[in-house]
View 1: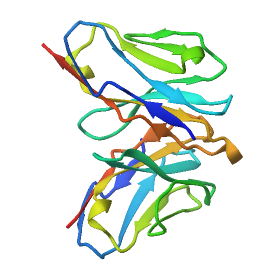
View 2 (view 1 turned 45 degrees about the horizontal axis):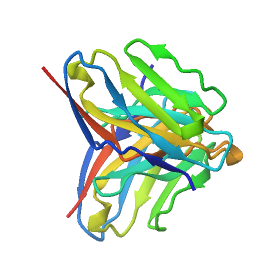
View 3 (view 1 turned 180 degrees about the vertical axis):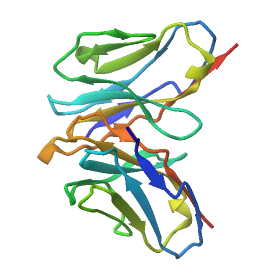
Length: 113
Length: 117
């Protein structure tokens, strides 16, 4: 059974640009969550999608957005990139959410220069 | 608001020693789940264990065991006979957001475990 796949693995962007990250969940999983990991702030919840609807949102500015497709694949977008957006972005999928085991991808390492 | 505290920033042990990672949590909810994840240098968070708030029974799974005590809001994790491959950052996490069945994890700051020969 394939795990959670995130693409790309590494990305370098210039300040002010926008970026789109992709996450393919484990087959059959309908919940996809996104997390940002930085040395200073640790692991922080961005948002969660379930059946194409955003079900939870963390405390991040509106520059961070996401969506989920009918096949449960999810994308997150960051517009007007700032240096502080440099981080490891992790995607997690789970079957139902609500305390279910979340399985994580290897992440996308975003560097903003 | 929920909070997870991992007071141990870094622990170093010699292979075959037992090591316990501490976790203290805060939540107002009576229904919640607690997790332990492992993050090796590759970056992927690997699920280890999960307990729900209604089950304080402590268990052993291979070299892993955990001690869940609601009275002290602690969820400690023990690795028995540690191995070099156990070297990683370990995160304790709490999920108490069940509104609409949501899945939102609040993580601690992690404990870096180094197992040396």
